[in-house]
Image (cartoon, rainbow, N blue to C red):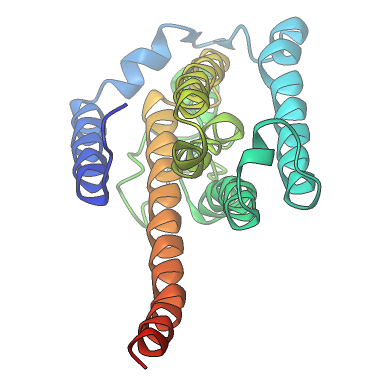
Length: 237
C-alpha cells in the first residue's frame, strides 16, 4: 500500500470530487434510471425477495457491525485488539457519524427520488440536486443515498485501520466499496436513487473520515508536544 500522507489523501479526494462532478453534469442520471423504470414505475420497487436481499438484510447487518464496533471500544475483539483505545473510538464513532451525516443531509434536501417522477408514475419533475431552493413538486428528502451509506459509512474506518493493519485495511476498503456499489445500484433499480446519489454518498463518507482523521491526528500531536518539551527540559536539567 502506498504511503498515503495527508497531502496525497487530499489530492485524491479532490480528484474524486471532480470525477463525480463530471458524472453529475453529464446528465446521465435520468437515462440510467430509465434502464429499470418506465411509466408504470420500477418493477423491483416492491419485489419482496429483492428488497429483503438488498435492503433489509444489509441494513440489519450494518447496524449489527456498528454495534459491534461500539462494543469493541470497551471489549476489543479480533483485529480491534491491535488498535489503541483512541483508535477504536475513532473507528466506531467516525463510521457511525458518517452514516448520521448522510441521514441529516437527506432530511434537509428537497430532491425527490426517481420513483416520484411523473415519467415513472409519480408527480414530481426532474430537478438536479444542485438546483438549491427549486421545488420539484415531490416529497424530497432523497439526496444523498441513505441506504448506500450503510456500507459507505465504513469508509471512514479505513483511515484508522491503515495504521493498525494494512492488509485488513485494504480488504476493508475493497469490501466497503463493492458492497456500497451493489447496494447503490440495487436502490437505483428500485427507483429509490440516482447513480449520482450513490457516488456522492461514498465521497461524503470518505471525506468525513479523512477530516476526522486529520483532526484526530492534530489533537494527538498537540497533546504529546507539551510532554515532549517537559521531558526535554528535565533531560537538560
